[in-house]
Image (tube, rainbow, N blue to C red; front, side, top):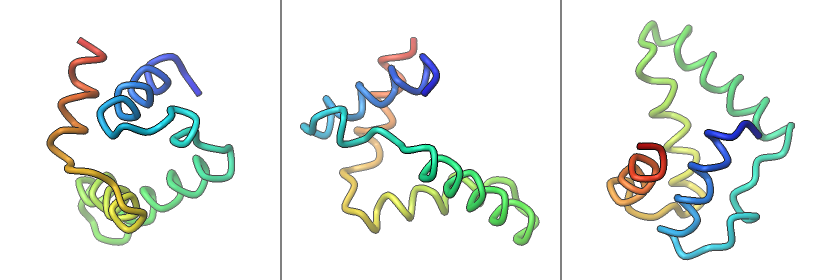
Length: 78
């Protein structure tokens, strides 16, 4: 995981109250999400659908309030 993504993961974990290791992406998960984002962007014709569908995958797994999570990432990378 690159340094920016690691920093974002740690901020998200802190905001969500979970151990950062619970949010670590395996190579297979990273590949699957990137493939999903590519499919969403190309088949829908809208690049903005890529992050949105990835977010829906996270919601399907029980993610917290998105605004709080986005703010945590913003704070950690500014």
